[in-house]
Amino acid sequence: IAGITQAPTSQILAAGRRMTLRCTQDMRHNAMYWYRQDLGLGLRLIHYSNTAGTTGKGEVPDGYSVSRANTDDFPLTLASAVPSQTSVYFCASSDSAGANTDTQYFGPGTRLTVL
Amino acid sequence: GQNIDQPTEMTATEGAIVQINCTYQTSGFNGLFWYQQHAGEAPTFLSYNVLDGLEEKGRFSSFLSRSKGYSYLLLKELQMKDSASYLCAVVDSNYQLIWGAGTKLIIKP
Image (tube, rainbow over all chains, first blue to last red):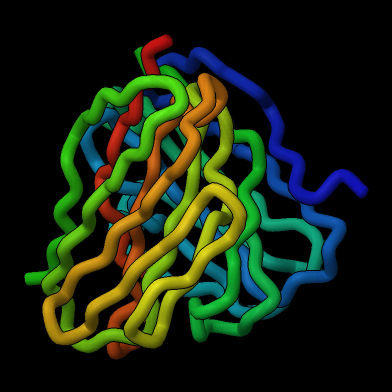
């Protein structure tokens, strides 16, 4: 069982370019999340999805969009990347549908650098 | 505002015991998580407390006092592999998960 996979592992991107980070889980979890992690700061929620077909905004959603066409996949898109979006991005999933009291399982992360 | 405080960094010796504290000020409380994150890797679940008291799980224990807005993670018989960051996260009254910045634990031989 793979759990959660993310692609790419790392990426260097020119400012202004469009980029999609991929996330796939095989645990049939209802909820999925995208976080960014920056040095000295806690994990910050970008977007979440409580179940397939629904999405919601987290703490720092500006400049990012998501979709949840099915249970397994939850891609994150940067429409026009800016240097402040340089970060490590983690995708996570949990069995709960919005209660946030279930354990979250994290993917290995994508290290994104925007120049 | 909502706030989670943890020490930025701690150092301990192999074989010893270390206590990592977490204090929180949140709008309500519906549970507290501890996660471990090795450098360059994903966070992994350690413990979840929703009631006051101590929960022991092998070498790791987690304590919660809701009245004091306080938790700690206790690591016993420290091993070099315990060198990692330890993240505290609180579920608030709206069931939002609020994350602390994490405590980097350095284990010395």
